[in-house]
Length: 502
Picture 1 (spheres, rainbow, N blue to C red):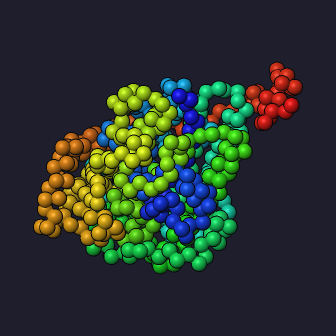
Picture 2: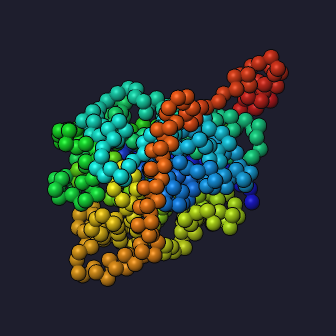
Picture 3: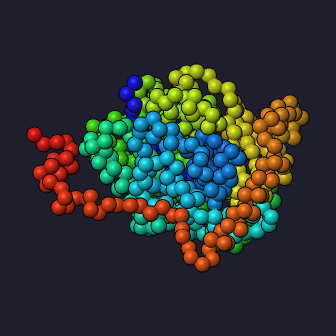
């Protein structure tokens, strides 16, 4: 079979409940809506871990954090873990990344042959949590509620500057690929950092949501004392006591977040237009690394297994996959085997290296029974948390906390914990048995603590004396760009034009 080109469009911290079947009707997202109309839309897709680096390592490798060792935003993604970029490159693809992937460690490629931008976040061990000091808040890099109290309009920000560059480099690469100098199929990953906080948006997008009816959370803050234990830890980690959050702060934050979805929609529209203008066909996959609670039940950002944080959009547009909605729970760890399947890679070459399974049979109507597993062991936790999602149920377990069990069909906003309800004792035991079979939580905790302790030693050592950062430095060969004296001008002008002249 002819290997198809593949375009992966990834965004950061996009709440999957806003994409029940493509973008919600009230979102100003015409380009994503058009993409959704020709895609398989997985309405119940979940991250492998609700935090940037562990969620992205899981997405790229098809493995959960306990297997990758990427427990948090400062844990090394080892070079010996195969990613979809390795699998596709090995199968003959040109693999390229424009944008964020939050790789930690000296390997800043992980199978990508080309990387067009640096990352927006650091690549070293400086953001390592410390389970030895439960409740300690590391102020210089932990989230705080300043993102909420500072919400509003700006025409440029750190993140806008980044995503403007990501989109420019991606469209430039698509133009270059159209020139046909490389006959290999390509797999281009374009990864934006919006709508991740801070909640700041350009006025043209902010103005789209002036009369938005969704600026207040559907589930209000019940108060700190009424929160579950993990949510209390997240409140404390986010330094909530030092901020006075007003209803207007909440509305402005949500408005800016929605505005940034529209900002991204414009960027994605530009990329898809170049693809169309240059007559390149590609399978297209759209997803996020994790979600954002957006003030629901008083929680913000991610780090939680509640739907707003753990659920993500996931859409695939490819010939042979009939557009439509799929409600079966799936995971971002299913992306790597799915890409291999779509590309015609021998799946036995991928299967040993992934916890996920290809979504192609499910998209074609084959039933799927395997539960979705999620893990979290980063800031705001004092011990690992695990979650299983299958059918109508979501089950959450942590050695420090009471169990949580939700019936998402009857209680989609997760307001009634059924774990202590005698009527659901059998269901609870079923999930406890499944988690016992899958996880040794004591061993998992020990592994996380050992990793953290090692990294604290290494980080402190490497910041003494000479400093040799791991942050990716994009390379441009100036002597090979535009016109140089070792080039034939006639050949150059013709080869750089698309379409070619007569």
